[in-house]
Length: 303
Image (tube, rainbow, N blue to C red; front, side, top):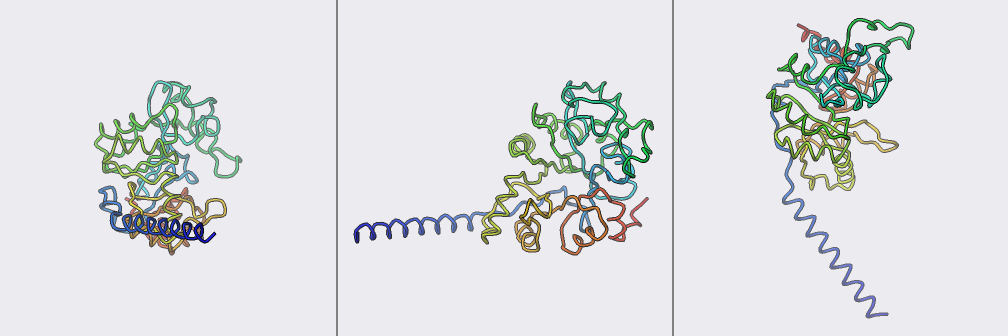
């Protein structure tokens, strides 16, 4: 027994020493996120990031919503990318057209001509279906190319929604075609899609995938946030995931030490927006950019 206890003690000591060496190496070699030109030119925080162009105020993910948000003076337009059956990148939130339009079916099964024939604002209502103020007004599902053409100087946050078939290569190519490498930040919850996009478009800013967020939250909880070397420049997260609090003063401070931006989604109520302003997040992704601009006293930004 004494011999076994001695051997066990040695094994534990070796494991502990090895762990200390590994952690020491991580502390010494860890690097913060490099500065990215996407964030150049912003003079105030938090950034006003119009979720789908402000989906509570105007029909989301339409050119009309994006035009209104740009006129409002928002910092970033947030949008969701899919591809049509014939490979055209389009902007719409869901995998199907059923919820928002007068059509039905999976987006990846519909051609761009079929998608363009739909009323993108058909089911949009601000009063729980009592009225549909933009129905029949000619709002269509926009292509990403149309958005790049309409707003060449506007910062954009593009979320990769579709994973099968993949759209990462075509998204990267379109960004290059329109020289938008410093104008867009690409996001996705899908780890593989995010890795594929970074490999194809390393110059473009990205936010953390689910894996990156989880890793950083766990390390920060263990007080090891300083060992994290981010490949992303931002974490776009809710305040809570299930019962776990994601966004806290501790996490924001730890993120800033790694040169990471924290963007919270998706608060819409006035009190909620004010609380996140006070908390010190770097960006707020909201369906109510109008309220957020008012709270930040940025009404003068409107041209």
